[in-house]
Amino acid sequence: MKKFLLATTLIVAAGLSSVLLAAPTAGDRHERGMERMTEALSLTTEQQAQIRQIHEEEGAKLKSIREEGKARMDAVLTAEQREKADAMHEERRERMEERREHRDDRPCDKK
Picture (tube, helix red, strand yellow):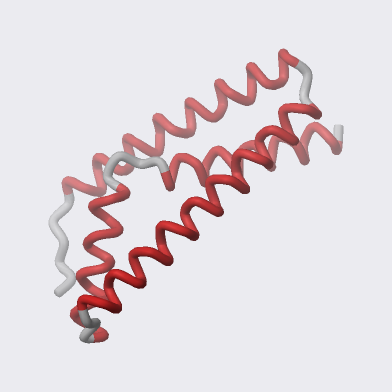
């Protein structure tokens, strides 16, 4: 039972991470973040390029870690458990997308 709970927790964490990084509006969010950082820190064009490169490299590392973790968890689970875990992941992805749509519709009061 403990192994099942641990595996489920890891799957949830991996799934949530992959959903957050694979979001269709992630690029827009990253660009808005870069704009805020550029303004607040008076970044030069060169600094912006370097920071973008760092973000890309770190994103690739995180993706690799998530994929490795999922492969390791899949090796522990039975076929039936993997199927259920995949269904749970899809449900979480759909709920997150719904929340994202509502969040994106709200006006931003921050300036």
